[in-house]
Length: 245
Image 1 (cartoon, rainbow, N blue to C red):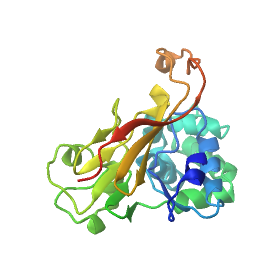
Image 2 (image 1 turned 180 degrees about the vertical axis):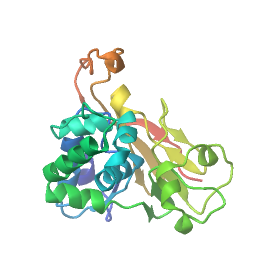
Image 3 (image 1 turned 45 degrees about the horizontal axis):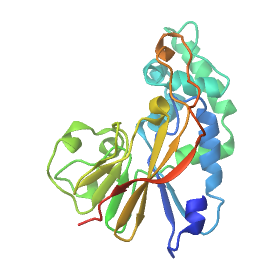
Image 4 (image 1 turned 45 degrees about the vertical axis):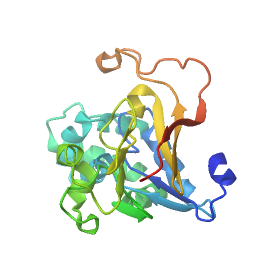
């Protein structure tokens, strides 16, 4: 927020790329925090839908998808709402009860936030989506499935688009950038490094925050998050991307 307040730009746009829930320690806290940001004045907010939000909404509509959702972090999201995977996980009625309890615990503001997430947004020379876009298809004709789920057909292609695609979804140790795409998913839930991209005119720079990272035994019942070395904070300009061509 301080970076936004200090910016000299006349138009201030913030785009979140999705996957706000699952795997991390406080899915509900993240949703509440983001849902409240739209109240901040003089900033154009865009919140995109990731495949994890799609999975949660799908679970609320069809509880039988619960086991699949929990394979990639839905159990953590449930815990943040004071719920857990049912002991009789093979019983459809058990999952239906969990879905009903989750819907009851979601506030109206949280549900409105989740149900009104956007699939993509274009700003200037950039196109923002959660996962990327399918090569050979115009950006304004992309399918919701591709915008939230696509990987290799997008990542491995050399075909360009009308705009530079900024995306998350597929994690990497460092930001991935070339003439056609900028991938900024640095696997925050695991590494503790959350990356943002600041674009102002032709200048592009990175904003990164460092926080707790998962312990090596987390997936086997060990310590979930390790202590942070040093202060947790936001470091501005830790990396710089070359100006767009």
